Length: 189
Length: 206
Image 1 (cartoon, rainbow over the protein chains, first blue to last red):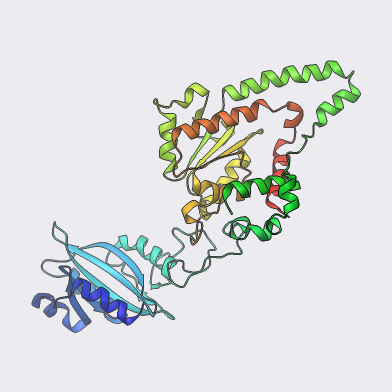
Image 2: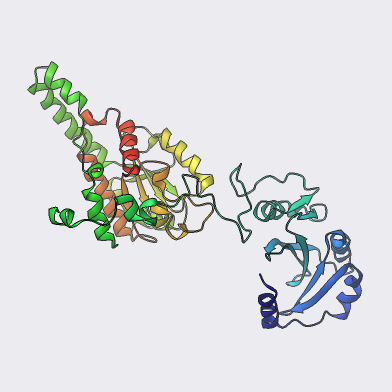
């Protein structure tokens, strides 16, 4: 996705500056942050991720629940998004990590939340992110032996697979049936 | 090219003309076994067997996606498949027909094939819904959806729709019964293999 489109999205949801509380808690471990649609977002690096999550997890009012963990492909980089909640409501903070496409590595958070086992497996198979230290990072939804990371924007499915290949009759009926019918054929039928 | 036109042209192809059924048993009876009597016997047995088969078609329920909801509706009391003798079974070994309703994914394809292989012959497959026919709305870009159940198992009846109405589901069952009533035990021997031959012949268009 280009810079312009990204700015367009950002301007639509009009980000506001972070609250002083979050700025004080996480300021030194983040590379940026804003409040978008009423929800704080923290941008961090892979090295600072675990300390930041630990700190959020050990606040007096801790963000103790990991409600979601997902991946985003921005074209030039892959982003992993952690959604943390606290209290009984849905008071949420998003922690985002940018990873280079070539070497997308991020430490696992299964030590903090065991439930991250499943979404991390899914993000790993769909976006090609390596979760360092994950106990068992096999394919979760994809069949075994599947090649490629299907949720990356530039992924093309395997057209040589006989189960997935386009139907020749549908793609190019004239090539399959040998050209449009001649007048003799139509007359005969 | 319109669909009707395409169908007409497909019908003109020599490979797609209906073939005369091979009847090895009937031929053997005619030549070796005092001809007429044996053939008459086969005809009577056919009638009894076909009626029995068509009047109690037990279906292997293979609901894979939203079409399965429609299949449930057809099985429930309003449309009531029981009156046609169709009962859903959980085990392939007790089933005559496999009702594939929904999107077949790569991961499920192996399972579908294995369950089909476990069904006793003669066995039939009904593909319900656009996804089961050709991949449906997933045809163009999906990385995980098999483009039609007929790439894995030979299909006898296709039911188009997204999802199909219960009436068309019942119509498919009636069509299957017609298909069953045309069967002869003379044809049924080696039914599965012959179906496979037909299947591959159908795929190999000139």
